[in-house]
Image (tube, rainbow, N blue to C red; front, side):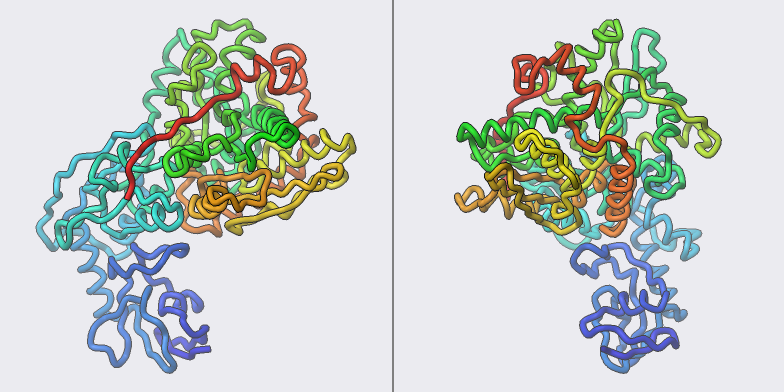
Length: 574
């Protein structure tokens, strides 16, 4: 242990700790902008400077290691003045658009400007006047707002191993730009949105489509139907001042009706359906010698990654569409028929934790209903804004039930929102289908948790099936390289693009650490435990769907509406 004094308080911390970490141990907050708890140290912004006795210059607390007997001052007049000057310099070329910025009241730079009482500009204010990049359906870049913290680059290159962003030029002319010097759509960006979570300001945001939703609600010729993804309810509470998972589902449904949805259904219904189709596809590959290991196909960011970096392995992907797209195809065919509604009038809106879902909905393959299957995708954050815009008091709102035919779901569908959840849900069903025996304990805890890669084995009547789970695309890359080399021992692999799975998706409330993702994961398993039915194949509405419409898993109708194919993207990357 190393002993030091910070602001007159003695503290002992492990060798190798930084001043920032030591200060946190004794409850002293040091401001940061480029630092992120789950990333490498950058020491770019210098907002965290402090005085260290014996050093002439101020030191960056995020990168300065502690030493025995060190004496540190984090709030001396010299330190405060230096931090204010640094903030004023950053603001000197930052757009003053707080009122119209997507990160208004949730911006780390804005918070620090208030904390340090920045009331006037000490330096000439000059914005560079760079063009916005609106080339993708999912993500918008505003380089004028970039403060060069490089957190987005770390998220893209280290966490995701996508390498879509980098630094161009040096000094005052330095800029974060897409690789290959082109727009984001031309880079290997997979639209996962992890850069949005990493950005401390509003330089990277989702493509906001609230106005499109409001226009649809106002159109008397449109019947606006929504589906809610498994991870959304847990996180939407954070957007309205509650704890993760605290908003009751029936109250959430009532809130959605308040903002204009005519019918409220659940993506969990098609999550259960995905398990039936995907589980049967896996069994078919095992029996008939199909391409193994089989990869799950629920995460569109992961699909984009595979198409870009591993096009030679696309045959390993399950042909199943994601639950969002299965729902979109069915709501304009099966559901429209059940309800007696003209599908041409249905405006299908999905509420997703994921920015890549916006891209997925726009893919030309996703029109098997005879229409665009999903017309609009809103993120959890966008729904949060709509709720706040509508002035809904959720503590006084009376609950409401889901509408008929595509609203029932099981605990297996709920856990789709967490890394390992798709795998666990599949194993619950595959085990009973193959063995014909009831699964006494449905909890496959080996595939749970925030570990980057997890593995397990399941004995199916003498056939041992080896499975693996990865979340975050740098972890996916390790498994993919193993498959490409012909060295994979697995039969079935689940991959989610985002750390923690969908609960950490690019469209979720801004997440500042993996610890927040774990809180959401814990809430998901509580909901699963409280579900009356916890196996996908026992969903009564899914049974009716097969009896009346699909007839059998992997059948003609299923292949027509629920399955698809993917293509190499042929993009250049660094």
